[in-house]
Structure formats: structure tokens, C-alpha cells
Image (cartoon, rainbow, N blue to C red; front, side):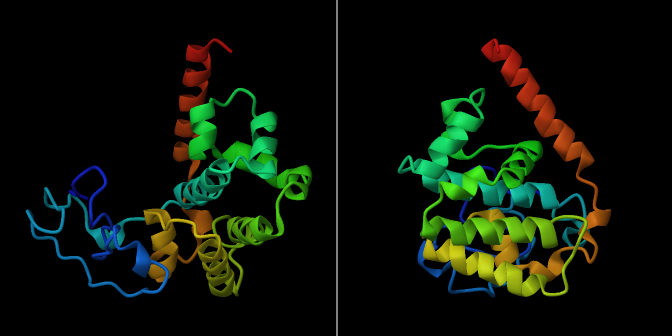
Amino acid sequence: MGLQQGFTKYCCFLCLWDSRATGEHYKKCDWPKRTYEVGKTNLQHSPLVDPNKVFLPPLDIKLGLMKTFVKTMGKTNSAGFLHLVGKFPKLSEAKLKEGVFVGPQIRQVFRVPDFEKTLSELEMSPWKSFKWVCENFLGNKKSSNYGEGVETLLNAYEKMSFRMSLKLHFLHSHLDFFPENLGAVSDEQGERFHQDLQEMETRYQGF
């Protein structure tokens, strides 16, 4: 999209969301619409494609939400985080601390009820909300009340003082930009890329 790389102030390709104004992130939903003037608001080059025709990939949003959740747990080495450490022994400590997972690993955690038993009452709310959004909005099924589910997720993440990432911002400010049928947007290539990358890292580590 021609945006400057790195931790930039304006990193959203749809609006002028100020990534550094953390005090406003959960309070302010409507941000000025982005202009595409090269040299301003962190735009280095003209977009190669029409921004309005870009799909927000469900898999990347899902991975980002998981990253935010686990990264926060990792700061305190909570029981839930330590459970994930034991469940995925081949994941490096750095990846676990940063909450870096792939789709199949997230589905494994969803299927095993033991993880939820390790969560505190405060952690349970954002986890259940995340799981609901994955199953009822970011997958093949789109619930009629997906808007309420996303709002519940945002409220739970705010209560846990989760830092709003760009992917969380998309849900907060651009929910109507997602395609009507997310199941029709294939994540197969993205999923394959993440799995191939994990396999290469595993070989490098000698596992």
C-alpha cells in the first residue's frame, strides 16, 4: 500500500489512526480518512492497488488477536501461559513470549478444555470472546449478531488493558470493511506460509 515500514504513527491504510495515541484507542472509533499523498502521513509510495479493493485476511486478524492475548499473559507467566509452554515444547521461548502461533496451533488450544481451566476469571472473558469471534465471524460461519460479539471482545480486551494492535483496530474502526462472506476469502496460502515457516525454523533448531 506504499506505507512506510516500522513502528509508524499512521500505519492503517484506511484511516489516520494514531498508533501512538494509546489513551484514545478504545475510546475513539472514527478517525480521519486517509489521504494518499506521497510524503505525508507515513506514505512513501503511491498504492499499487485500490485500497477499497483490499481484503482484510481473517487468518492474520486471528493470529494478531491470539498474539495480543498470549503476549500479555507471558508478561506475568500466568498459569495459562505456562500451560501453553508445556503444550508446545518445540516453540521457542521468544515466540511464546511474543504470542506467535499458527492457525493449527490455535485450533488445538480451542479443542482442549484443559487450557480454560488454567485461566483466571479476568482472563476467561477475553479468551471466550476471542474464541467466539473466531468461530462466528473470522471463519466460514458469520453469525447475525457478529457485531455484538466483536464489541464484547473489544470490551474484554480493554478491561485487560491489552494494547490495541493494528489488527484489533480493524475490528474496532473498520468492521464494515470486511467482506460479507469471510468464508469465501481463502486463507489457504497464508496458512501454508506460516506452516512452512514453522517447519523451517524447527529444522534449524534441530528438533
